[in-house]
Image 1 (cartoon, one colour):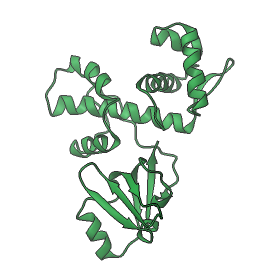
Image 2 (cartoon, helix red, strand yellow; image 1 turned 90 degrees about the horizontal axis):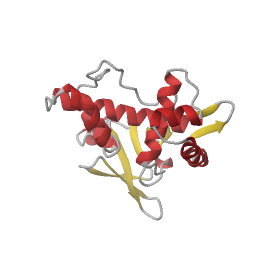
Image 3 (cartoon, helix red, strand yellow; image 1 turned 30 degrees about the horizontal axis):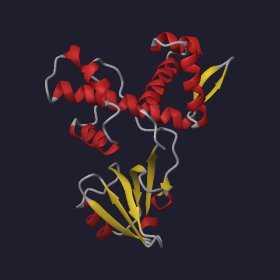
Image 4 (spheres, helix red, strand yellow; image 1 turned 60 degrees about the horizontal axis):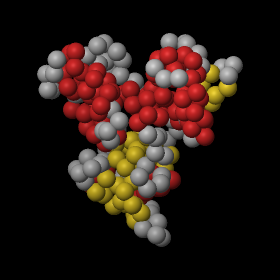
Length: 215
């Protein structure tokens, strides 16, 4: 599902308000986003149709599980980018937020994982804010169940040691992030990629991998 940068920004605002236990009404979100309430209501309608929020006048906007995952991922990207810019590029602290705001919508899930791994999986950003973890309420699914384009994190590989070594040598290991690139019309061969490496799985072997989908 494609979520635009503007839609992501609204999800992020609602997420922050939920963390602060503040009701995300059209007016309160409009005040934070510096727009008019009718503009917010129009966006609420879009996000509701996408099943990313639930909205009613009494309770305001509330993130669905999928919406929460989207917001958490965006904030995760933002804070990882800030950490990378400070620790690796030694950028001035006052510039981090502005640059991260630009980049958070652009980087892929695979790049997010690579930055995370390069930094040693930090728990906080340069401002001391916690970097949100992956969805804590997920049920692993078979890799076979994914659709083309879905990004995922490897959770379990049920193979013999020889097979595990083959894939490990190509960095397909527990915790790594990939996406389903393509599958043949008869579903006999599935191809995944991490942006650098392409791996093919047979219909039999694809049933031996469980993953967490990145919504």
